[in-house]
Amino acid sequence: MTNKKSIIVISILILMSLGLTPISLSAETPKMSGSLPMEGITIDGVINETEWEDLDWKVPFYLDIDDAGNPPDTDGFNYLYLGEDLSNLYIGLDLSSDKTGGTNGEWVGVWLNTNNRTFSSYSEWGSYFDNGVESLVYDVERDQVWEFLSSGIGGVSSRVNDESEYIATYGTINGNTTHLYNLNGVFFNITSEFVNGYYVSRVEFTVDTLKWFGIFEEIFASNILWIQFQIYTKANISIAEHFLYLAYDDGTVNPNDLDQIRSLSTNASLQMLQFDYGAGNLSANNEMKFVLYANDTSPFMTQIDSLHIVPFYNQTNGMATVTYPYSSINNFDIEWSFGPSFNNVSNHRMYEIRIPKNELEHYDPDESLGLIVGGYGTMSFPNTNYWVFSDKNINIMTQLSSEYLYYNMQGCEEPLIITPPSPAAIPGYQLYLLFSIIGLASILLIRKKYRNRN
Image (cartoon, rainbow, N blue to C red; front, top):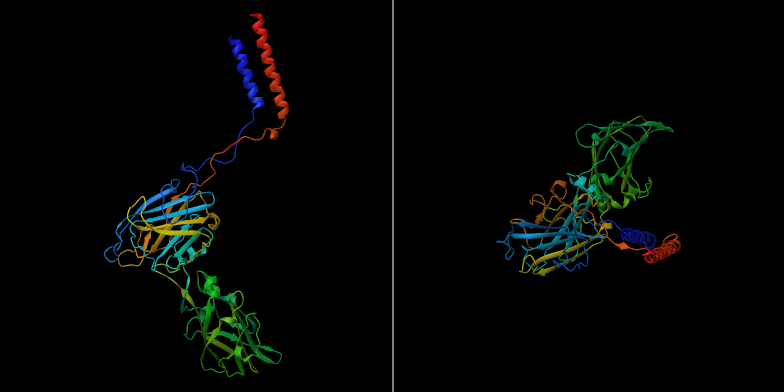
């Protein structure tokens, strides 16, 4: 009887191995946190605990609010929600302390460090935008992205940046850019050379205005309104001509266009020339081009004691301690509400934000996600006009990577799916089936003979 059972079991296992189709896995194991990708969340500004049940992080944070100056806002715990699916990052803010329903002056900001970047200044921070650093600053009152530039106008003291930005096409130069910075009697000297019966000097300047700003260069340079130009010059002898030619936006110079010519000192007396350089003269790639030209029948030397440049442009529309309220994220969904939630039954402000991951260049789910959130509306810290949740909660210091809070999102993969392939997709399926039938028939015959013997 034992042999009989063994034969039957072995035969059935052989049959199963031959006749049944194998299974395959269509994706990897879900993320290590044990939660599935977020599903079914509706971005309506209402924090629904059921919709957020597959989140990665729910972080309570206590805020000391100016409840005396802005009642009914109160001190208390607020909540940050973080989650993701394959395509999106989700951020929720349940601001139990913000019990003011109006949106007058209200804004909210999210700053992200998506690829573990390290930075400690505005210039370093700005250099990583769309390359591991992202931001979204939203004007809740106007229901739009916060305008980066204001109508206010300001200037920044600037200069010729380095020696690569000028060349002597006639004559020779004795000096460098440091001799152009200050009015101190230390000169930038240009010595003439003999050309076609005259002594001539000609120096071409091509100044890169982008280098004047250090951050958001393209934005500021493209919003230059005019440039104040101030130069102190003289010559070692009296000379016939000494001019400054302004190039057109295509880089060409027309010495016959009187609107593009400024006269400089033609004697040993130091003279100052100041004028406004029109932004229309800047080239398409934001270069400022001009030429210093002089000639005489005798050898000479022209001298520059100071060359001072001040571009005037639209200033940033800063708020609170946010000097650069820049939004690199252009595609997103944001909604807000005012009402009760699971965390607080009294009416208060809530936000929900969805950001497609293709907006987060170099987002690395294996690295910790750095985040700062802040805003105003009218909830704020005492004696300020903002609140912030960051490492120290003192100022909104987005330019310091050390001020970001870091959360391990641990990646996100598709749930496990078992998909049996079609029998037609298995090579030799019909042959396997034939062997299976023969094997089954053989088992039946063996059983019949065994019974007859007994």
